[in-house]
Length: 150
Image (cartoon, rainbow, N blue to C red):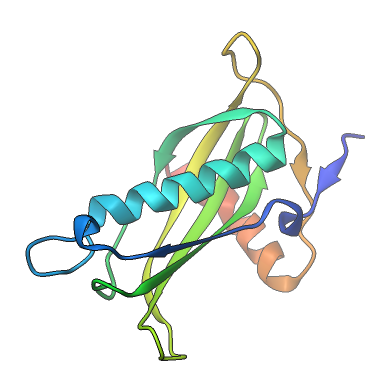
């Protein structure tokens, strides 16, 4: 039987501060910059799980729920939900927090699909995911449904 890895083993937390060059003329974080940060966190998560180079294959709809402004702290969490043969689904969530405020507001959430590559840049198999808690088990099951819908 193939060895399985828990989602916690490859979980990534990425923190950024919104700087003026990350924003539009209104001082609000550009959506493209947030997606870039989310993609980087997802890539690190996928590569940690696969122990191989991984590339972005797709990402689901990205909704911008709450704005982040200059000076805000953005926290991004990337966590694998399920591994298939050569691909993995990574859930990425982002929150914003004003300095001096303990309340975080959800910025965005999306599911990214990554493919693991071997040294010849060909898809290679990845270890399966072993969900531990109820949330991870639900995300694991739902990942199969999301994959079918893609």
